[in-house]
Image 1 (cartoon, rainbow, N blue to C red):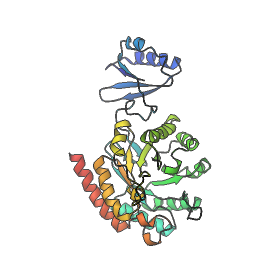
Image 2 (image 1 turned 120 degrees about the horizontal axis):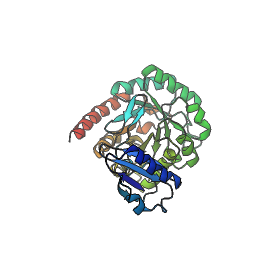
Image 3 (image 1 turned 90 degrees about the vertical axis):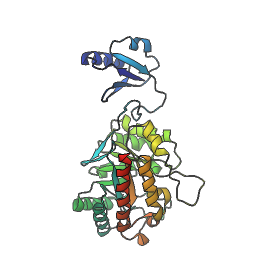
Image 4 (image 1 turned 120 degrees about the vertical axis):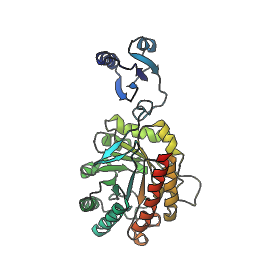
Length: 335
């Protein structure tokens, strides 16, 4: 339920009204915009007497919210959320690109790639230390050593690091990671989401392979309900009947998500197609659709990459894509 307050409502009256709602066992999410102040009521609102609330001299209107997600809902928070990570902003007009290899393989590799993507304009370094792989015989990542190498690459370039977590046992290892990624396979690992919700670290949440948009937002709600509202959503393609690409990029998910939630939405064109030459057109499509950023896989030697070489760009190719992305962002912002 959303309670819309009248402009200039006295603060003491607002606090008294909030106290009434809290006495009914409800929690309150306050949102203040340029012209509107909202009270989002979270909990069992079925017993709230709407007529009684409307009778308050400081209440403009009351609306019931049918969607099961509340904190992630744009109705509760009309303004775009801007997530700040190590001084870099995403959302609310701030466009950011995360780039780097699927897997950290060596210090020389990750530092070389970090310097390359930084020179091309990437704001974040992405790299996998713990890798969920379909086959148990595939490269599983360097694990804790990989995290150490990411830190060295951060020290060498200043780029904040983004890397994927696999389970709750690993959380202590991620204490100084700038942004923690939850992969598609863990999107509905609710125990992990709840634990990450108790951190202050920004969370990059990827959409599950076969998850609906509502399921995606409910996973974000799990994180936010525990107190961590620094969540970024990532559309990375969904599983369909089409075998010519690794996944099918649901480009329509970008404007749909933007209409339903205030959280930043980015796109991963690398995993969506699984084909390097398709990264550029899908990245440009994401910009046109209104995405707040991109996540792109870059490797200094894709032909010999230990994972996902077929979808990885070289640093030189990434620089070319970034040039077109920058121009596209400027064009669509000017419309």
